[in-house]
Length: 86
Image (cartoon, rainbow, N blue to C red; front, side, top):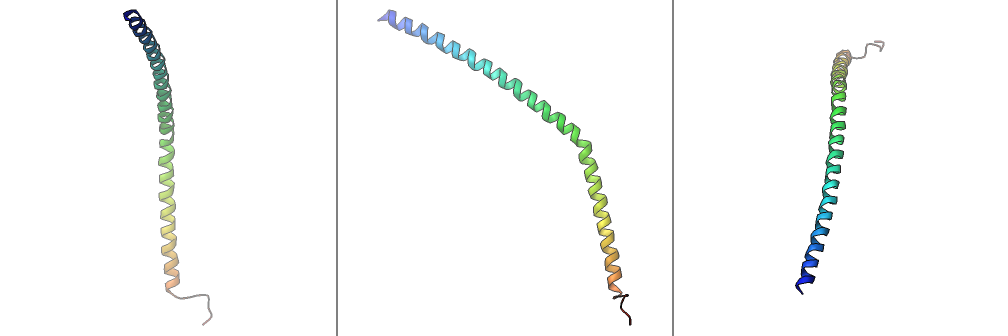
């Protein structure tokens, strides 16, 4: 009985060690993949920062033009219709 228990214990230890090595290598691969994905995302973010700043500038300029055009439209409509003969 002791011989069977010892053999079973050694066999279980070998299986657990092999499983540990497989899981450990898989974990290393996942870590390397996630690091490369993180680096790619950071690179894209750095590339888009100037573009984002330019887009904010253009939105501000277009918003300013819209505001100015609304002010001029209100001023011309307050005096009444100039085109009507009177």
